[in-house]
Image 1: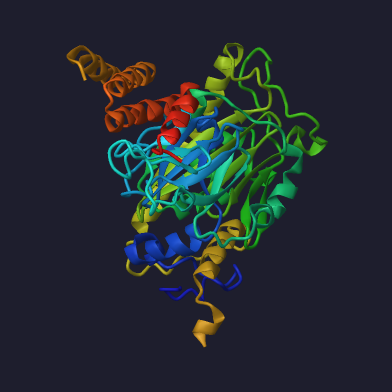
Image 2: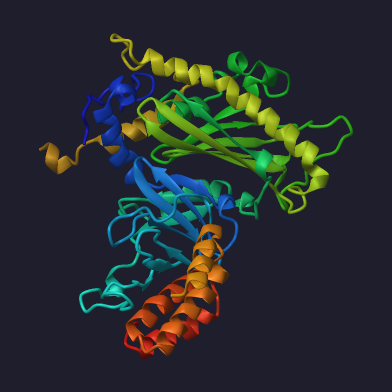
Length: 385
Length: 74
């Protein structure tokens, strides 16, 4: 339900104003957005690379909700509430191998990796593991709808979103050429930023190339503003593309292997898209990344960056120096953005800030995201009557 | 349970040694069964079963079958 006046946000970009301040500084609005924008859609939770083998499990607290991503024996990933059905104990505290079953540390109720309740020790008394009133078939782990795309584990907490393949059909089709195996670069290809800003500001900044010349001056030499184009898919995603991605990570001419079968467009093209609500992707001919925005509080976000490569050999020792150079380059770029998103967060406390005025030429992707958020927060038409 | 077995179990718990926990709890269960203490035996074999399940130890199957046979599992 809408708790602020969003009518100006929903106007065309040339007349619109941005989301009101409360969308960045109000606990009530943060809670409303948690439900309508993050729980009701497909939100990025973690990545498969964090649980690479059967029996691996990763606990993630997502907006206060204790969740557990588990890789089954068959290799697929499922997400459950990380809460025992007995007394509500948290099942898994740390990422790692849980073994053949998930055993609650409190009374040892054991769940198979597919969530089924397998045994309930002493539930009927010492040495008696059954009881007439304990129907194991009804007491399995609560599963949260999940889907893996580009190694990102998406979740739909409410259970009401369209199938992911439909929700993200357009961007899946757009990047169909990149539907290739992804190989995570390993520990040095993963880093994070703990940023004092609302998660939406990270999306908004990522979407636009307008800030590049000033905030990322290093790009001016090889990826000029005029080489970028806007990407807008109203209601779904937005971002930017570049026509001049030319990786030069070494002096000796070595290059990462490319993804196979890409069309000529990707020889020097790259795209950077925010898939709403909270995952920022980048694709290039020779590597890709995902940035998962973890909304911690109205004014705090943890940005989890994961870098992937096209060839299974690249995570190996022979490519370590180039992987480190690539990760360092991206770390530097994303670090440069921290002061602007934190500055915008502080600016939202300006009593007379009206949400901001968009450049129709340059801020389309950002407004696209604002309009999507505003639309999701609109009350149902029936309730409005 | 005898003192040595008890000490061994505590050490296995401290070390997180699932293999030892399976073996030692099964041993405690067998000892109780030999004394005719079925309920106590089921208690210990339950622990052996749980740790065997967790470890993916094939003994889980036989432990489960035994407990089920005693009416203590389903």
